[in-house]
Image 1 (cartoon, rainbow, N blue to C red):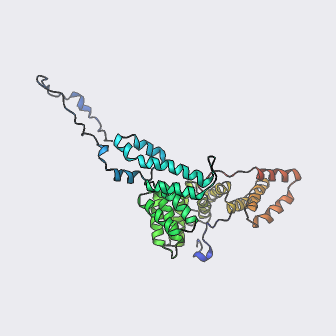
Image 2: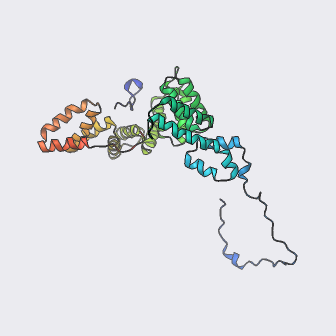
Image 3: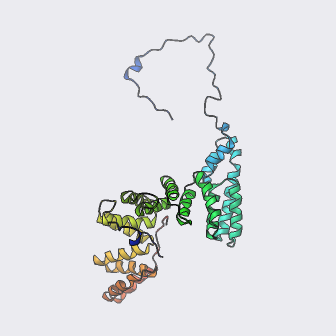
Length: 335
């Protein structure tokens, strides 16, 4: 696969409850005055002493819960009868969302049908689900209906959905004309919400100075944040940051670790560079495996180095290395 992760030379300069008080030791000796029980009545507790969850207006409740996933939505529905009734449309949206994904991906015994998938997602949108807004927006975007997609992303983003915020930010980067400031604004909102793809895209904007002042230190921080969250392209860029000492303290050990993590998750350039590093260390068998994987993913530069190493290996070793490449499976990631 071809990934553009590191900015090109043309993109700019190279990486030149209540707190409990501590009891007092003397409190044991304090004696409270005795109170007569004659004619006294037990204290009355009012049902309004605690928070009255049922008083929350339905429109506010549904806005708060619009981006909830099914487990959180189910838990919120159990708070009280009023919430159970108020959140019924969002629970119905979850069913529609499930049907939509089945049609989108051709799962659950149904054939892939994007029209039926979109219809289910739009019904979920009518119920107020931001998850459905994002999925419907994705189909619109794939069909070239970018205005409809952006409209749905905006609704989801305003309701606090990190995926909607991320997609809205990326949409502004690809819009004509581009709107880098709005893109950075929404990517930042999604990033602080923990969305790893948004963190990576925000790092690219900071790296290239799009919509924000160029800041390599902040860019490296967000690359590393996204890498720690499992985003493969960010792992590769974090490795380059450590290797060059740009934005992060230079560390060969950290650079190698992140490069290998990216390679083990299918990043072709990382597989090529990790293969070269293994070759330089004399790890011929391992080097061949990673270089073969990189070659199969389209890294043509890896082919020559791989062939040179293969000539130095015995026939059984060559067969073993290629068999390892055939049986290789990428580790899970957030892509």
